[in-house]
Amino acid sequence: MEFKTISVIGLGYIGLPTAVAFASQKVKVIGVDVNQEAVDIINQGKIHIVEPDLDTAVQSAVSAGYLRATTAPEPADAFLIAVPTPFKGDHEPDLAYIESATKAIAPVLKEGDLVILESTSPVGTTEKVAEWISEQRPDLVPPPFNTQNPTLKIKIAHCPERVLPGHVMRELIENDRVIGGLTPECSQASVDLYKTFVQGDCIITNARTAEMAKLTENSFRDVNIAFANELSLICDKLDINVWELIELANRHPRVNILQPGPGVGGHCIAVDPWFIVDKTPDEARLIHTSRLVNDGKPHYVVDLVKKAAKKYDNPTIACFGLAFKADIDDLRESPALEIAQVLAESNIGKLLLVEPNITKLPNTFSKITHVTLGTIEDAFQVADIILLLVDHKEFKTIPAEALKDKVVIDTKGILQ
Ligand code: SAJ
Image (cartoon, rainbow, N blue to C red):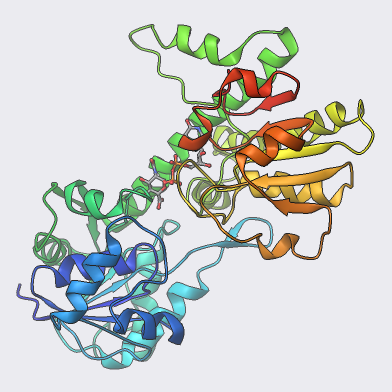
């Protein structure tokens, strides 16, 4: 199948790099986003998010005329939906963005077009996309939509993104892709599309399995981090150094324990397991418990700090790191940020935030007078308690000497 024009709906952390990957192969790409500001920035050849090497790629794709952004969907041969799937209420998946993106493209679809859902989705969502299109375009997806034996005049598939923030530009090209069409023709058309730039294997399955594969990958990681986090609690109680313990256990040829930390953050690993729990609550017991273990870790860290602070009169607590993981500036869904916020609100002392990847105090702290943003050296001068929350490269070289008069709570095990 030939694709002259490709449209990517949602120009965020996944959609924009994907749009650029197609455009860099000299395919015309129309990027669509509801955020007018993001659209304007991209049309100037600039970016509104942080991801290594994305800026230069967008700049050349826009200046060469292969990438253009707009707020209103336009006709194309393939549409990739890459919008967020957060959860709402009691961890139920919120499909509102996928539904509105699908309904926005429905009017411009034509016979033969390919629609790919890239957003991480609960099992059954690709079928829902077909049903939403059927409601508006019965000429393309005749009702009632039959999941067992679909009759389609367009092609619909799920192909979950699996790239690691910070390495997106490389992983987009090199990673294997799992492709699940509603029919074998849908899958094959999707392989043809991704082969435009993907060097990894494009492996075909059905839509439900592709949906579950993505949720499984992130749940696997969440469960394994929960094991490490649980070990850290056990070791604290038994007076054992958890980092040394894990290093020793990992010398076994079939053991590979992940690292404990202040909790699990980001928009994927802490979210996706809930999509499995929501669908199969009675069966997903381990996955559910792991979520609770990881979500409980920030509270445990706060309690450790409160206990340490009791020995001082108005201590200064330096929080090292606010991002959701090392060497990025992304503070969304960050356990480090959550811990700093709870500490700031609990008024146990002054808070000095040390985050080398930001230049401005996050808005949540702007009205709290006892919270400031500072440097590592400021912390050495004034802090009574050092709380290490993120293993940023800048913190890995801190000399033991600089910490000798401080109480150190190191949630990542990198300080001497
Ligand atoms: N973390 C630990 N201990 C570890 C590893 C990670 O506490 O040993 C924490 C991190 O500090 C962070 C969180 O887990 O708070 C998640 O970080 P991550 O680097 O493991 O993953 P993400 O969320 O940046 O990206 C994940 C990736 N999924 C997997 O590795 C299975 C990525 O490939 C997915 O594309 C991405 O989720 C996504 O978009 O779903």
